[in-house]
Length: 288
Image (cartoon, rainbow, N blue to C red; front, side, top):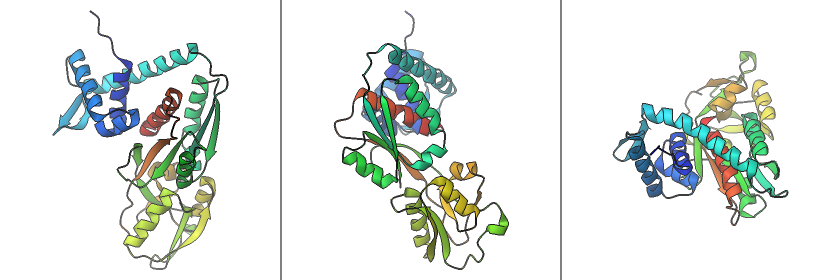
């Protein structure tokens, strides 16, 4: 009898590969950790060899064959979703309200939004950009169906990945603020942003006086303020580097802790379509 892979099992494998954790994969997929572990155990019996290397019950890494299978699994999942989207009953203009921080659009998010639009052409997507704290409030109040946001690591459900943080300054040394012993000039988004929260925590831990050199409302404005020498910003490493800002470690400050990326879905809106969109964006966050 030929071997047949189960799509849900492949989704479990991909989620584990993306999050590097059985528990986080379970959170992403809305399943229990034991259910995810059982699927992987059955998969390994099916293929006849381990796909995940473990130590003390925890994932260490994918095996070489596991890495190969994950590559095929991504393609099979995508093909399955495209096939379903092409033949399923149209939803006659269902409205899907998605929230995300504005700086997410500075990443590759336009690509995933186009992908969602291609797979769900009958749905009307409404994207709202705001601070993370406000997006969570909008979901709790039922004004958004789902939201992707940033937070300091909390151990709460909904985590889909994390990002290393760095301090950034102007790449042009003529516009770098001077005396590092003076009050620290901070460039940040408004209160409610996890980047700002981590920056303030770091400065507080070092008992460093600081002031707002610029409070920006968009990422281009924040980057421009840093480039102009108005101060320093705490940003995800990849985001700051993409704007060609200069990463550095201020003297006397501890290193910044990672910021967590998370998703939340409004109560009563945990429908297959919403979960599908949440899963697509979660996977994008994990591998981008």
